[in-house]
Image (tube, rainbow, N blue to C red; front, side, top):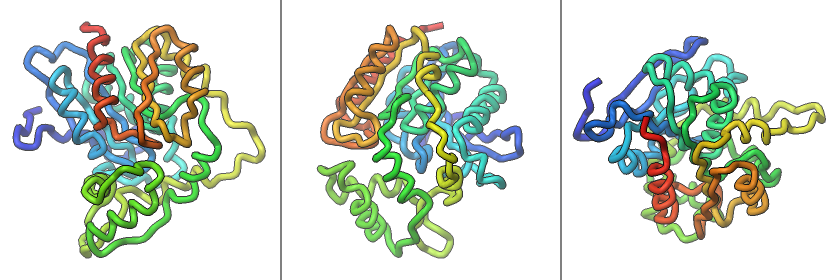
Length: 296
C-alpha cells in the first residue's frame, strides 16, 4: 500500500463477515518500523477516524498506526441490521481487519466505545493485544453519563453552515469542554459532522447506531465487565480520565489501576467525557506508554 504523503495516510477497505464494507486510515510509520506491532485507534460511539487526525500522525513518528471506523461511521458503510451496532460485532469487524492485513499483535488506543472494544479484543484474542490506552472508559461506568448519551445519540437534524453547526454542538457539549472557544468548536464539529450533497451539515454517523441502546434490558443487571478488563493482564495500560467526566469516576479509575499490575491513570484537567487526546497531559502520557510497548 503506497502512502499518500500529502495527507499523511492511505485508505484501507475491508469486508465484515456479514458483508459490510468498512474503512480505516493507515499511517505508515517511520522507516524500520515495519516489524513492530502497529497501534490501532478506535473512536467513540458517534465518532470516526477524524477524531485521531492530530494524534495518529504524532504516534506514527514511532509506529505504524491504523485508525478504524466502526460500521455506520465516516466512510464505513451502514449496517443493514441496526442490532449489529454492538461492541461484540465491532470487535469481530476489527479481527476481520487484521486478518485481512495479516496483522498478528497490536496495541490499541480506544476512546469510550473504542476502549470497550479494546477490552473485548484482549479477552477474545489472548496474547494479541500488547498494550492499551483506555480513554475515559472502563469496566464501571456512571449511569447518569450513560443516560445523557442515550438522550442525544441518534437525535438532531441539520444545520445550514459550519458556524451554525458549531454553535449547536457547543450548546450540547458545553459542560464537556467548558474552556473551548468557537475555533475549538469548529474544529471538533468538522471532525464529527459532514456536508451533505444538499449543502446541509449533519452528524457523520448512521442514526440507527442508537437502536441497541433503546432496547429494554428487561430488568437484567448490566454485565460485569471487570473480568473483560482484567483480560488485559500484564501489558502496559494507560487510563486517561477527563477531570469533569460523567462516565468514568475517580473512584472507578482508582480501582482500575489496582486491578492490573501495569495500569497507570492520568487525569486530563478541565475536560469531561472524553479527552480529545490533543491535550498536553494526554500526549505526554501516550508518548510514555508507547515507549513501554514491546519492540517485537
